[in-house]
Length: 239
Image (cartoon, rainbow, N blue to C red; front, side):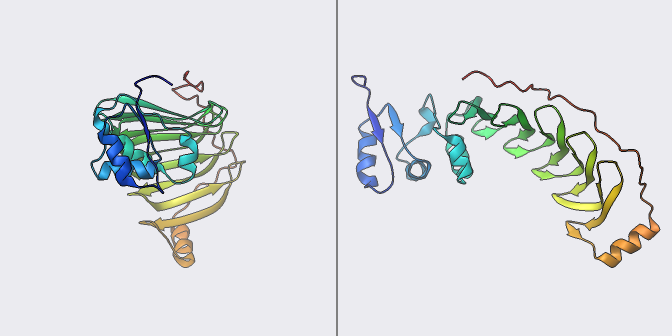
């Protein structure tokens, strides 16, 4: 406890009017759950634009419980400058790393496994997913790769087995599956073929007729993705 360090705890189940009065008296530290903090922001009873630090305790649990939108809303109301956000679990393992500019995600976003290995890397532009993304099995071998356009999957996407063999490949168009999708066994042989149009799966008859007219190469030799190391590495930054 520090003399003169005015701390106010605000939370649901108690009078918000009394809490607002406490805030108006002046406060250095505010402790609040996401819901009550958002309520205070919307009532203009608290202004996060002038704060220096934000600490999100147990952010991984909040994300697991569906509070991602609440967390992002709070961060968007923090100072309009570039900042890096690191989310850790209770054991100190880095869960995600994001860069915010003017309260919005910008640039590379990284998600980590509990052991610290990189699980996913993607890119944001003005808070919207944009550009290439990759998912990893252990921070090294690629699990999936594709790209986003205006926040939606768009273009070719590939999925891989842990040994690097292609498991599935296809096309996304404006967020929906489109065209031919192939699913393969580990030996590279095609086990299933699908035909999609604007996010809708074609009927069995349409699919059969399409593949009668259009040959799809089925190689016995598997096509492998080169084991790729992440460009960011697997080690987590120090807290």
